[in-house]
Image 1 (tube, rainbow, N blue to C red):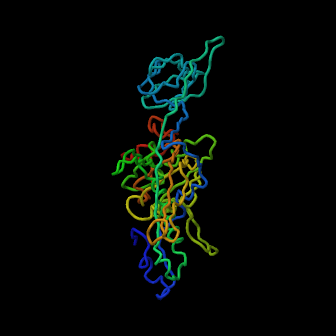
Image 2 (tube, rainbow, N blue to C red):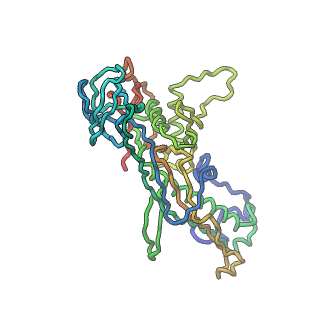
Image 3 (spheres, rainbow, N blue to C red):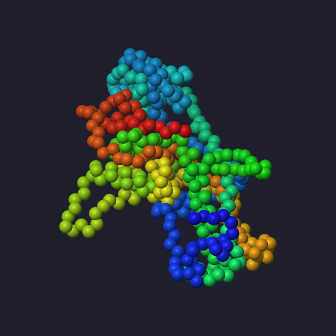
Amino acid sequence: MAVKGVFASDSGGINDRVGDFTHAICRTYPTGDAPLFALGSGMRRVRAMDTTINWDEMTYFSDRVKVMQDLEGDCCTITLEDTSTVISGSIYEVECTGEVIHVLGVMGNEVTVRRGVGQTGRFQIPAGSYIQKIGTAFAEGSEAPKGYVQVAYPRFNYTQIFKNGFGVTRTAQAIRRHSTNNLYARNKGEAMQQHSADIERAMIWGVRSYGMDSEGRKLLTMDGINRQIQTNRWTMPSTGVSLEILNLIVKIVFSKNIKGKPNERLVFCGNDVVAVVQDIVRHHTNYDVSHMTTTFGMDISKWKTPFGMLTFVTHPLMNMGGPKSAEMYIYHPGAITQHWLRDTRPEENNKNGTRNGIDADQGHLVSELSTSYACEITGALVYNFCKPDLRKMDYGYKTPPCCSDAPDCGCGSAGPTDAELKMAGG
């Protein structure tokens, strides 16, 4: 039980004093391997120069463009969804037919092309299909091509002040105890643990705000990592999570990486999510038990996929029940940066009660920092990850489908599309 105020002589464990029977305190904490804040020692840490931090993001252009209208085999004007990176001289391949086209001119969203380059044929190009850039080609003595510039997207966050107090009366410190003779140091250590937990919560679930407290003083809060991830947010269907959906999530998350960083991901979740993943893996794999087997089970703390390595970390704050126990957060460790305006330090009045005017030693911890998650498309938030769907999925494809059959899949192979992943609201 938590009690606000200074630690008094009647505070703490009932039987902790020497005059009582027991001589130990059993402390209960939620299970988990390591919180995000503890792993922060391996993440980038920089000095903040202001209460507002700013950074720019620039994504990689894949030069894969969606066709907006059907195009007959004899037509040479194609309407595209986005022509910002399409320039004259570019060569594209129509993914669902293999036809190669050469861009001759661009006007708005309409592109004039030469069809069937290299005897690749002229076929109908359906709306919803994609064309992929495979190079450029220019004639001898031709003029310089038109250039384009990638414009970075500005983002910002605020720093947030964290404080946690501790204190012990002189009477409480004078009583002999089994657990410790330095009650002040113990309470300070507990305040440090709570301080890191508060920072932890804000780094993950914080919401950015700019306002004032009840006395008119400026009060800032920061956006946590989850608020900064906006692209990949999915709610799992009520039927459960299938292996196909799980593979598609992993494929999408690993489709982008940060330049110069290893393509790896940390998965923060609770024990319930780990149990669901284990059920899926166990149902779709074989494990032979022999007379030499001494340990039976599956270790999925690391999952090596064809796209990259996932490291599962059971988070203490996601083992407390409620909706968060069925959530899964996928982070790129190289995308997280801590911005410290003021390092953690103690402010103490512990000179036998003579400095703060009361018969107690008191103090508090204070930190001021913010966090940024760069290249947010490398992360993902998955909700309602609460039960497995162990049904075998059969798409009925005799041959790999055309991209127009599954335009969002992006690989032209049999499998679930993005439509199977219901976008999370807000």
